[in-house]
Image (cartoon, rainbow, N blue to C red):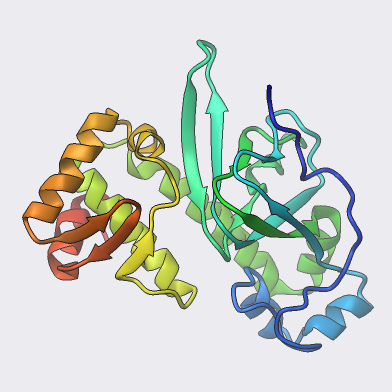
Length: 251
């Protein structure tokens, strides 16, 4: 039995209640771009660009499914969302994991339908933005338009990272450093975090076997790079892990 799609459903539209009347959520994906143009939450309300809260979504609930009509993008406010496709043989292909402050749905702009599935891995809260309305706003705010382009460019770049011929150790190091940097950019700890995705999902994303992922993580712990307890990760030697990741990240 499949879980229902929850993203397209209309829910009461309310302004985000994090911060105050003028302040955006601390993890808002668009706050910096809007603020740089002098737009605060009150100004957005005047322009009828309202933020619609969606959630909580529980683990296994779909945000949207491949083929659903496209009308909105969403910023993850809390939790982790996995995007994936099912190939012609019925096998799942993990496309990415989306953390607080990151946007899902941008890859639907071209075809007017979502080209993949998005599912909650834990308890997820979203801020939903009508794409037609935010597109009109972006025409008035050059910084917001540039920000949307950067988000789309980032998705393309991340998708190509693990298509290269790198070792299992390099791929895992890049995955962990990528998570660390993304979390740090939103004010979370770069060294201590939780792997909300399963080992199987990580292996799928990295194009590896699940036993390879487990073996590499164990080796990283033995070598003093990490400390792992179930899904909790502590990066013990950040410089060494970054050095190992650089072959993939090339930054």
